[in-house]
Length: 167
Image 1 (cartoon, rainbow, N blue to C red):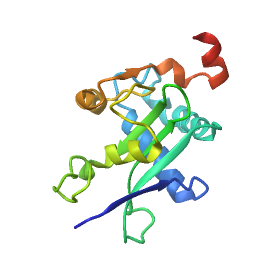
Image 2: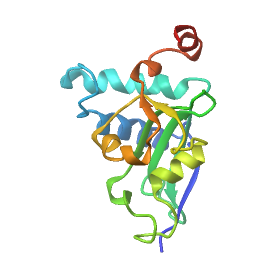
Image 3: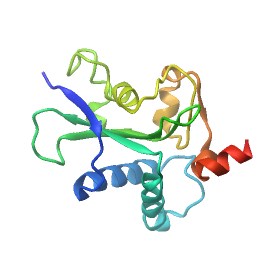
Image 4: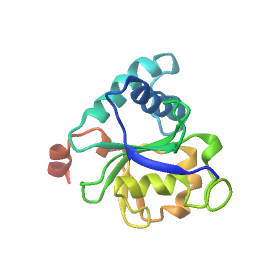
């Protein structure tokens, strides 16, 4: 049986950073909530934007990976980027490769699903209040699993000090 584990992302590793940035940018491109950025400009605009978010001091990225797989691309199955120290926590983005969605609880492995594991590893309780920046169709599908979450895209645009002064 496959086993999924979680660890802090090694964003200094080019391959791992590329997985996070490219997965985020590609999967968010067709979201209705992604703004008015023109599709021909999407990648040149969004890649640096995601890079800036990853560089924020309190923002952490956790990756999910298949234990025992040594190929540093194939082992990665998802990630979460969040500021768990904010109150309430601020989740920027959560991504799971399609094949691994709905695979937990005995379908492929016995533990919780990748998304739930990512939240736990990042220190964010999905059953408690938290804010999130990027909304996708999958986010709305899973809304019943995150009942106290609030979509707050403006929180992702400002530094923590500016967010606090705007509240």
